[in-house]
Amino acid sequence: VSSPLLVHPLLCESAAANMATDLWSLLEYPQDEHPRYRHFDWKRPCVTFGYGQQFDWVCGETGRKESDLCRRPTGGGIVVHGEDWTYSLVIPPLHHACKGSAADVYLHVHEALAFAFAEHGIKTALLPCAGAVSSNATRKVIPGQCFLEPVARDLILLKGGPKVA
Image 1: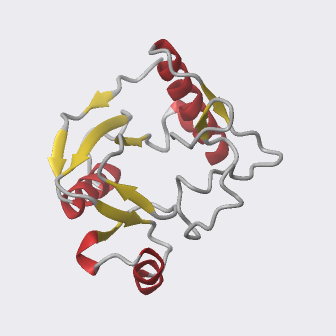
Image 2: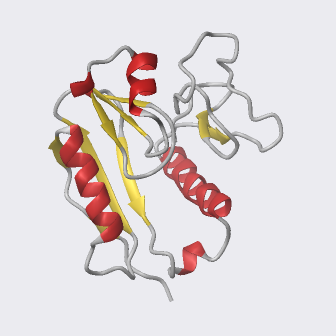
């Protein structure tokens, strides 16, 4: 039996409002048996970073003002927002899609995105588990930058292009 996907309306908010909405969706959403998808925009450019990263370290590494930074309620590295396509997907832990490992769920979500991109003529590839090294490895990049340091099962543009999911 398949659960419906609840789709939130597109909103353009501040970084703090976007992250608060993500946290609400993760912790407090009333229909917790249904996966929730939200595509959203940013009122101004900003940087988000995972809950496990140190705020002072992120400030130093990005060179951004404190007002341009916002902690995500989830993990992960540094993500620069403003010109990107941002979404959040919350899958409840008891949902059938979560029967595998976190890595399996990550893979299946990216496979679905690859299919959607292909439907629009955009060719992508999943970064393999073995040798999951960024094509930008020779460039100096900020450690922990999600889109400059792809990992296994990330979705990249075909032929060594940048990470897209």
